[in-house]
Image (cartoon, rainbow, N blue to C red):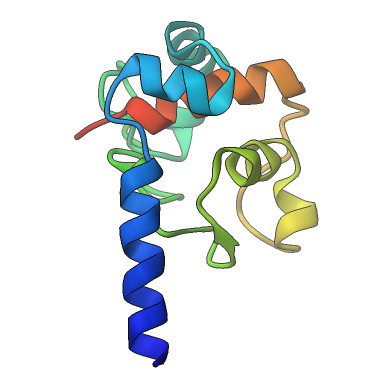
Length: 122
């Protein structure tokens, strides 16, 4: 029964994750192109590998390519746009002691970053 529930959740999530900019925008309310610029300006690549961002070769956090295909964020949150926005904005509140820094990302910026990450591929 548990395996069936996990399979159902995986199927649901794979159907919900965007594969293009339009879908990412619809799900997140964000602007993926602006999100790309913000990922660079917040220097996310200092800790993460981010495809398409020059110099984003960090090895502290996980690589962010295909993050939309992951089921869980921060080891505890279901991968949804709202949860990703929350994680980007308040990582220490989500998972105390995480290496992810609180960069004081605004809600609109987090929404745009989420749109970018949701369409990101390796």
